Length: 205
Image: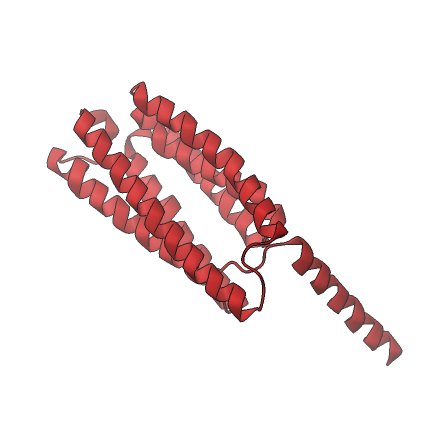
């Protein structure tokens, strides 16, 4: 009896320590909504830029300045919508768990997420300005994956798995250089939805 109580006490202590050192208010719905917005963005990009050309292949499309600006605008709108939905659902989850949305753990998570993400974003912008458009999709996937892996030590372990999957997909996209939009849709769309469903079922968030 005493041994069982001792084990339960240790489990409670471990859960308290885990909550104090990790941001655990991530919502599965955040991942699902981000994936849906990414798929919508990919579809709009395809219809706007690729469909008129008749090919989903960088090698057969001559990008104009107008096309590049459209892609950047679509990407920015998609990012804003996905981020907004993520904040909304995460805030709701934090309230359910009676936890603060903004605390020391959140700051550490965001800092470690932002370092590779901002570095990759600036690097990709430089590549766009120099005309290396075929590398944008692979590099955004790789840098995003690196940012998730880097931040995963401050949140749930599933984030690390998602990050590793994004990196692998980015490397594959670098080999199949002409199909960046397709890999982008899989990485930011399909993988996020799968991750969100797993999180939702596992943590009932």
